[in-house]
Amino acid sequence: MRRSTWNSVISSSSWSNTCVPWSGWNVSSAVTEGSDRGRIVRAQSAAAVPVRTTTRSARPTTRASRRSHRRPDRFARDIGLDYTAGGVTPPPFAAVDEQLARIRRGTAQIIVESELRAKLARGTPLTVKLGLDPTAPDLHLGHTVVLQKLRDFQELGHQVVIIIGDFTGMIGDPTGRSETRKQLTREEIRVNAETYRAQLGRVLDMARVRLEFNSTWLSTLSFEDIIRETAHVTVAQMLQREDFAARYGSGRPVSLHEFLYPLAQAYDSVALRADVELGGTDQTFNLLLGRDLQRAHGREPQIAVTVPILEGLDGVQKMSKSLGNYVGISESPEEIYGKLMSISDDLMWRYVELLTRLPAGEIDALRAGHPRDAKMRLARLLTATYHGDALASRAEAKFVREVQKREVPGIIDQVTVALGVGGGGRGKAPADSESRPLWWVVKEAGLAASTSEGRRLIRQGAVDVDGVRVTDPDHQLHAGPGYLIRAGKRRYKRVVLQSGKKS
Image (cartoon, rainbow, N blue to C red; front, side, top):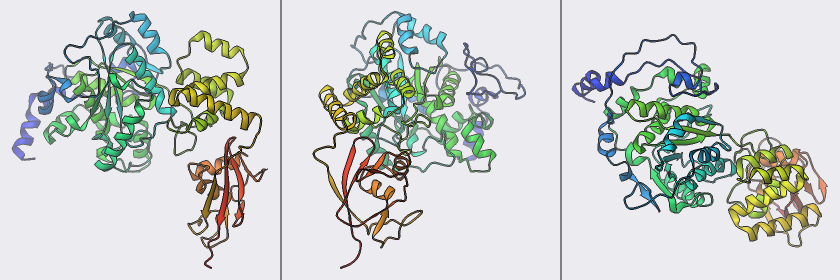
């Protein structure tokens, strides 16, 4: 940047007027009614800093904003009905109390509910935003918690906008990370975004979804624009995030580009004129920053609606493909049904609350009955949601036959695994050996999605070899005619280990 340009930025009134000192807040504190961040969450012990009162323009301060915000729908890549377009009449709205009751179900926080009530009372469609960074495109049930809430808004007649973060995806969301996330290429993001688009239709009515890519506006910002936006945020504010604070405190690097991620997400809300933004509880900081940035641009702040993080099949850690405790919505009907039947009774009710929209009366009736019947109802309902009633019925019948009645399937797939494809490392024989540890065989045979899942299944006693339960992950299997291996309650493979010796 030329010195003259830099000086004009520093001396501009909009720069000085938008540099608001940060007093600090803790997003892990209890939320109360109120619109100021000091009333939303408990103030930190930071010393109070005098704030100069200024008058902000109602228009965006950046050059790109001035181009785009006159018509926020100009960026829309619609794939169906858009209530902001001319000539489209939104459906009639339910009473405000009825809408709030549906929105409250399965949510962790609404910041601020009184403001949401006021927005709903206007009787016009709200712009409800959900951002997705296409870094892990295979959706699982953990992702569907927030998608179901988005569906609630959609069915209440509001305008749903999904932002595919093709621009922010090149930064990578640092939330919960202990180290800097690897940046994706544009091609990786493009492929992942297409996968997202296909899977979202399993939860949402895509004919009524407005799809956006945030590169549309973020890529047009000049360096001057970015400097102006960063003036709304302080380093102290960013270090209120637990993940940043932990890394900074332990001497692990926090890159400047990671600070820009929550700011970019917040700017998305400015660009879209979002009324509501959804996210998991781990996104609370980013959603509140969106409120702050909208205020800085003279806008009415969005409502932040957060949903709980869904526990995985183990009932302890959050659902994650890398942890092997997930249920993917693109998995086979048999896998979805069987995995859901394996969860604990306590976790089952958590899933009923967050993953279904069963009426309260039906849930009460299920609680009064046998837990197994309730679990089968849950498993069938969710399997049907992603695969249809016919395949859900078939999956249930197979589960009853093979698991509850302990019948071995009549047809079992056979897989041949060559012993010369690796095997070194902890607890493994060398690559030229005639044996392999059980966890390696389970993974290579496709009976587990990952090494960690294979080890976990074996330690939990969920793996049989030729009808004998094995709990040692390093139990050795040898080249030969083959083994009948069962992993979990319903996955069978006949595995032939092919010798790695040269003849």
